[in-house]
Image (cartoon, rainbow over all chains, first blue to last red; front, side, top):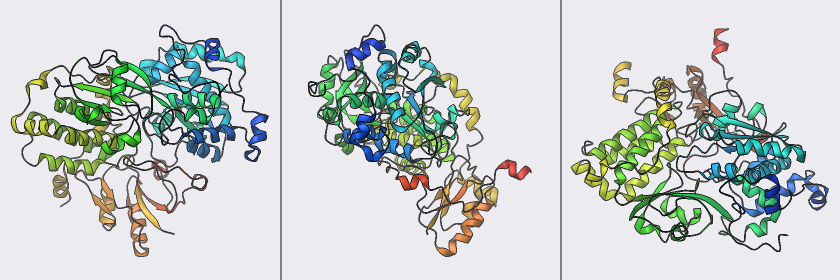
Length: 459
Length: 105
């Protein structure tokens, strides 16, 4: 089968029907039967003892990396779970807290069996008998998943599939937050160690994988690593789902080859409907790239690295030239600060201070030395949380300082511009308003006054 | 074996004891939270570090033995894949991590 397949797109989105979810029958007709991890593979890879070892090897050869943002090598993660003591468990992370991303929702809505294939294969490979599909409250209406889980019962795959709804929140999809929630706690990150792969859900070694990652796993298991590597770059093989938004004819989810240019994606989406000032890559805690540099940029981590960007969750959000990039960034930064779990002092205080200072720059009330102050606050905040939320949030501000230097200087000198009052282009989820009050209550205990007051109090 | 101090940022409530007792490795930020220097502790510092860890009212300061995994990595760099050996070895308990319920008992 693999020999006859050519290296073309779509791969994941093959046979997608915008009207309804692909049934099990249709799905198997499109992608072929579930590959068997049995004695046949054991004969080839006998020394592993575990038939799943062959799949892990294939995934390693395919160079599959996690698609939830961190881009961690999937095979390494699986091996770590396999090496830990205890019966493992699989968690399918489809919480998709990233407001501009809808790829995981699309997968579960239209191609649930591709994700479930991956979950079952991953479970078998690591020796798990349970997999939990996690979606956020907003997507709790995805009956396609429950229906798909029901359809698979007749297959008797030996892997019990469950469905779990996780509270909305930017950080509730963070690996340890998800585990914390599934163990009955709040959906907030925990301090590592132990990492989820050591001790996760019910104290068992837990493989937390993004829904798209598992969908890729399902096609790698069928077609093999060599076929998978026919698309993409040598360091980042295969395809990726990206969510394109902004002034474009047809915004939405696209499957691209890693290394495809942003221009080709824009062309595929029907072209721009307005002049673009910049593009936000990777997510809201991502990186701005100037529109003048944008067209030549290839969408792979290797090509994006000089900009300090990565494909991340696959968000490609275009900002029109009519919008004020400073006001937009200030708004996103305030939102990211509000999305702090409220657990770590440096994140609560640091992100709040950065958001406030940036907002002061945007309105021209920051005074001299704001840039230095911002840089100092960024260095105080980065890398000091239990999770990587503060690191991502400061990345947004840093890239804004690089790309929008001219606008920032104008705002600092003359205050708000005419475009500041325009309606915001970057969408924020409706749930963030409900959650805000709750978070304020939670973080109040951690907020501290400045060090000057502290010294005074101590003396 | 080299040891270093690590702070659990979730448990930390900025009491600032650690910076008083181990200024060689710990400074405080604008808000009173510890900025930890992750370099290995010298032999004469270990006793001070232990005292600082014991003095922390929330037991947020930990002394980590070399090689035990604390977290993947911070910043934009790629986290190192965990090795099998790392995964199996449990962090060496240098101090017993007491909980609030221990204190009440």
